[in-house]
Length: 472
Image 1 (cartoon, rainbow, N blue to C red):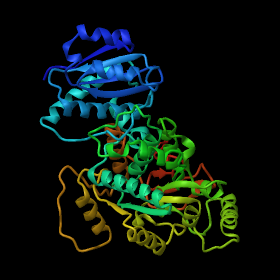
Image 2: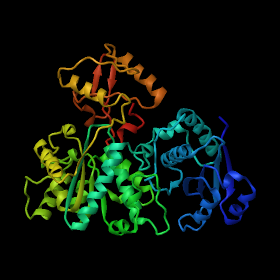
Image 3: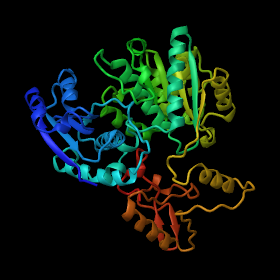
């Protein structure tokens, strides 16, 4: 395949006018391009670079951009360009050096003829753009970052895309009828519930902020939502993303801070919602099974807050009230991301409440199920097989290629193996169930786990512990 060529120009009308005499491919050939200044970047694809650049020059959102780069390749076609465009948007968002000002509804991950050979050439395009300063880190490092993992610029799989579109339709229907709504998106770990939530919020904010001159991506399944009528109904909605887990909340706030149309204050805790003086038009609750019932909280001040919020919302300290009641009292519309099987702590919502929540959503046809496994390459069959083994259910023996399960009788050897894996991928950790006392809570110089000559400590950092320097 012919190598790709990245050509750089100033982004101004004089340069665009000169394109006609520069290269015929700039007026009639599929290309991918980037526009950027020192703070922002936009990625696009077109078959007529001259006409498309003139449109961008007329756009207020892009008039401040100064540099234009066009990726040319004799073997490019429309499918390749859509793929490369999405690839670069995802990596730029994960790199975090520049603010990506694209909308997210057009991100694709579609198969096409000879895709594998094209994907290998994308690395060359990345390297050229990195040499020109658009990227600051290598691909492997970007893909291991939290910015990449929780970016709203993800290509949704079919069941995710269907759930998002149906939920948006449901919100529009509820707005028209001026009635409240409750939706549930359920799925096992690794099916992308958090990705769907972040994508949905970005999509709603993009629709609300579109201008009359914006053109929707006609290839997107969400193109029919980008209309003035839908925009006007979503404009001004107060949206909050409730993340019960403190460690994840900090990560997601960082993603929202770096994403146009989103903002870090949109990411809140259940306590933030309960104490807020204003109501939300829409609350999306991640890991809803981690909302709590009345129980001993992590700190004394939280116990006090629990009582004060309940008294404020319901008139007295009703100990039967849960954080789920807070969410319902403070929102007109709410969407719960839920996996009841992950409710494991005594303070988590009881199974009966979670079942009632799913039944409530199902009664109004607002319950959606995510099935496609994204975290484990072996897919749903692997997850189900392991779940059957752990719960001692009868199951037929299955084989999964390229997966390795090792049981060690020598702990030091296991630790050495984990360290070798960490050097290869940067994704390895030593984990343990809570079967040893937390001695270091009172004496940081002590050890929690002592097995032979091995001495280990529980992680000492609660927020984002998995990425801390000592997490391995």
